[in-house]
Every structure is written in C-alpha cells, then in structure tokens.
Length: 187
Image 1 (tube, rainbow, N blue to C red):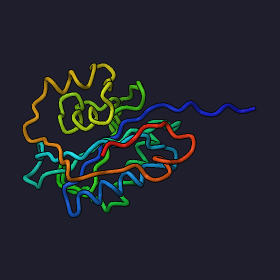
Image 2: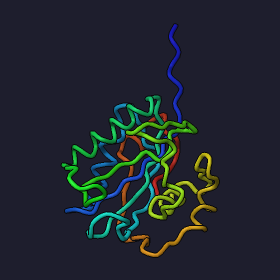
Image 3: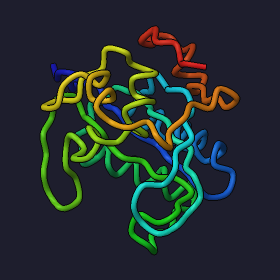
Image 4: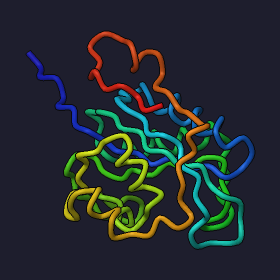
C-alpha cells in the first residue's frame, strides 16, 4: 500500500504591469490552481510602483496561498508555465511583464541554487509581497524572518496601496469544491 505524498502550504506572489493587468492576475490564479497545486486563498489586489529595473508602469500584485505535494522545483515549473500562458517574454531583467509568479515559501523548506532560493531572499523587505500576504493570512510567518505583520511594520508602504475596486477570486473548484480548506478568498 503506497502512502499519499504529504501536502504542505505554498505561498506564491503574482504581479503584472503590462496590458490588462487584472486579467493577467486572474489568468495566473486559474493556471496555478490544479495540476498539483490546490489554491486555498487569494489576497486583495494591491497597486505598486515598480522597484528597481528600467522605468515602467505600476504593477498590480496579489498573493495566492495553496497546498501541494510537489517538490519545490516542480512548483517553480508550474509558475513558469503560468507565466508562459500569459505570454511572458524575458528580455530585460526586472523589466515589465504580463505575469510574474514567485515562490515566496514552500512550507518551511530551504533551498538555494541559481534558479530557486527558498524562502524568497527579498520577500522580507518587499511591501508589495508582505501587504497582500498579510491581507490573506493575518498570522503568516516568513520562515527564518518572523511574523509577516512585524516585517511589514519595518518596511515602507510608500508606493503600495490597496485597490478595493479590483478583486480576485479562487477558481470554482477551490472556492466551493468538496474537500476544500474552508478558506474564503478575500474580496
């Protein structure tokens, strides 16, 4: 008798600053739910001024919570597939993009290689990650760094603001399917 792989929580940050930004975030949520990742919660939408890189338009950002039994490298592959589905082209480092998906944490897993570092090495200093994460998971903890609420209190919210007029929802299977986590998406 084979054992089911152990599922563990995963936190993914989504951002878009090209084209229909909200539609690309929605596409990202849809593309990431399923195929080994089950979405359990999604934050509100935050607009943010770009950080680093060339001059570009503002981003829309959100955080997606999920559970997975996949190894972190396979989660990374799912993130890249979601970006490809949105037509992302990598031409300029930190340049504009239709969809960017970063793994912030995969449970308490630590990982370091050129393609993947866990937890995300700059998440603790990025309000555009911390604010949406706190929005969807008020008791969140960034492994090795502490409570997300405390980390957000030490960063600046300049250039980061909530967009109450914009909403993301979990796919129907995650929001109302049987065996779900019972987590309600933020509106």
